[in-house]
Image (cartoon, rainbow, N blue to C red; front, side, top):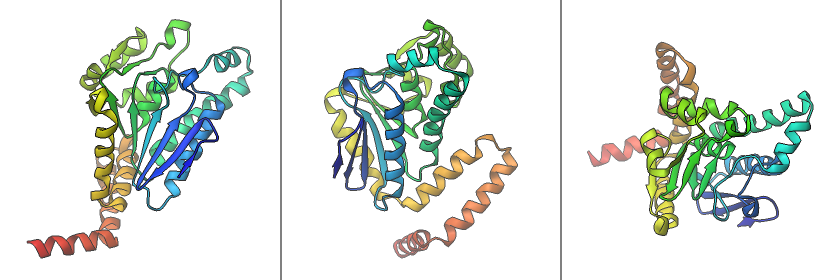
Length: 256
C-alpha cells in the first residue's frame, strides 16, 4: 500500500511503515509541505494497529540537506510572528517523533545536514550507510542551529557537540558512531537488506511493552533519579496488568 501523491511517500510493508522524504531534486530539503507531510505520515503510522516500526529515509542520493533555498529566503524577509510559527512547526515534528508509540528508525544514505541531521538524530535509532555524512553547517551562513542543538546534546558529549556546532564540522558515518550519533553503520551495497533485517526484529517483541518503554524512556529525561524511579514504578504496574505480559509470563513458566 503506497501513497505517492506528495513530497512524502508512505508505504506499509507488513508491520513496517516506510516513510520517505520525496524531494530528491532538492536533496530532500525541508520546507513547509515536507514537514507537514512527515507529521501526517507519523500520525498515520501511529494509528495503524499492525505497524511495529517506522523507517524514515530520503529518496535519491541524500537523506536531507536541511532547509531549502526558498525557505531560507522566506526566513530573511518574514516577520517575527511568521518565523515563530515556522520554527514551532519544525519543533512539533521533533516532538512528534518522540511521542508516537512505535520506534522510528532514521535510515541515512548520503548527507544528513543541518535540520536534516537534526531530523535523523531526533529518531529513536539511526542506521547509516558507510558513505553517509553528518553535520551542522548553519554557522557558515550566520544562522544558529538552535533546535537541533537540544537534540545533539542528548546524543553526544558536551565537547563533541560544541565542536560540531561551532566549527560546522562534517563527519563520516564511522565517526558518527564514535560520537554516539549512529547505532550501526551498514555497507552501502547491503544497506537495504540489512535495514530490513534490523526492522523486522520488532516482530519478535511485544509492541505494548516497547511503546511503554519508549514513553517512559523520554519522559524521564528531565526527572530526578527518584522521580524517574517513581515513574518506573507506575509503568511497571501498567505492564504487569497487560495481556501481553501475562501471556509472556505463561510461556516463560511453561519453558522453565
